[in-house]
Amino acid sequence: MATQIVDVLLVEDNPHEALLTIRSLKKHNLANNLHHVDDGAEALDFIFARGKYSERKVGAELKVILLDLKLPKVDGLEVLKHIKSDDRTRSIPVVVLTSSKEEQDIIASYKLGVNSYIVKPVQFESFAKAVADLGMYWMFHNQGPGV
Image (cartoon, rainbow, N blue to C red):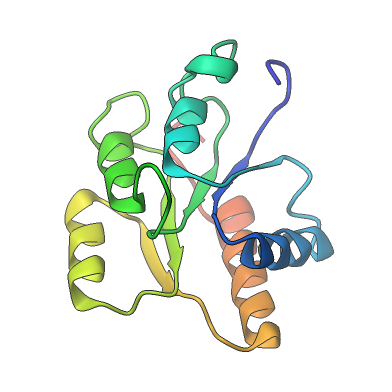
């Protein structure tokens, strides 16, 4: 893992939705450097180079984090809070990709510094297009700091 470059971190606990997201990104050649974790605690370990990811550099190479909110162990809002409160990771774009349309989730996400909040479409075709468009934007069009 230490030498693998990761551009996209997908934090999604639903295996079906994770598979759909990965397939859509792969279809558009956006998943070559993708890493998937299925709970908030492992996401924090990955991002902050702890535990089995201790050989990584904190926040290294990440172009975007796709973050679900309803996660086991540590919820997505708590993950977002940690990312955006640390100088080493604050500039990593975080896109909440969730089924929650709850106003309090949207407000809390933006207060914590999320870069975008996307509600997952129910239909497969719409979901696949939304993920592909999202990947294209953050991987090729967005200009991050130092670029």
